Image (tube, rainbow, N blue to C red):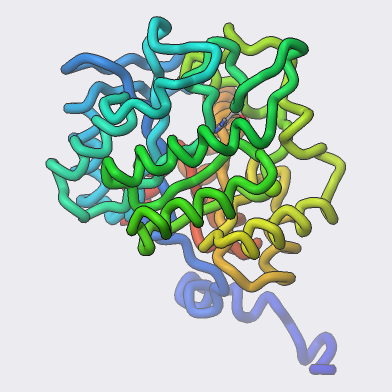
Length: 330
Ligand SMILES: NCc1[nH]cc(CCC(=O)O)c1CC(=O)O
Ligand SMILES: [Mg+2]
């Protein structure tokens, strides 16, 4: 044991700004951020999303512009989510396999704009492409079929890989998809494409604004509780992570973020692998609403919450505040 009061005074090192800087254990930099972007059709289009104030869907030219901004801001990675046109959504989500879908075109627009100046993370799941808003194929009763969905997810992953994705990020929570996708990537010569597995993704009430952004909120009947995790579970998250790592994931994701930092910590301590968190749409909206209501300073709320992810053990955070935070940090 070290000295006790009055020899030990923890306030000593807090007394001056220089000393607080010197003793700070955790740092947040723009390199810790992944910036999610919503893609829509057309050109010169910016569609604000009402439930995500400050976030818009962009057509390819706008996506390319955001990529240039990311390079300037030092944000290393973009995550893409499409708002598929209603006419291209179907029961089986086959638009996910179209080499000309919004995701693939956005990948190419980013490459044309900045080359490999940013990493491109692509979401694998069928919800932006299905007419029923579920992440996979369903039977007559509406149950999401695991193994048949995995086959489609493999095709979706290869489609994204061919378009130039750097990180394949399955967010669907089907069993066995990481192993199937990894095997297919190896077979097709994509040995260096990363997989970031949404390993512990919970059936959360915080996803509402995202479903508006990709246009699936009105389509979704029921919930996703037969595949996403129960918020009461923590041991199960470790099991999910163990399986995804064994199947070939390079890094794992915990989602949502702030209410699940205990999971981040347990995963980091147990596995010592790169762990990421997704500060989801409802969390973003909550911070924006709090700031708008005068309940706190927006910039301070943003930086404190993002720093908390780093302190909990995250290598990085997927956040809609990425660009704003990076501007505050540079
Ligand atoms: N594959 C679905 C998916 N991918 C990312 C999010 C939510 C992200 C957010 O709320 O920001 C969701 C929503 C869901 O599971 O219904
Ligand atoms: Mg799993």
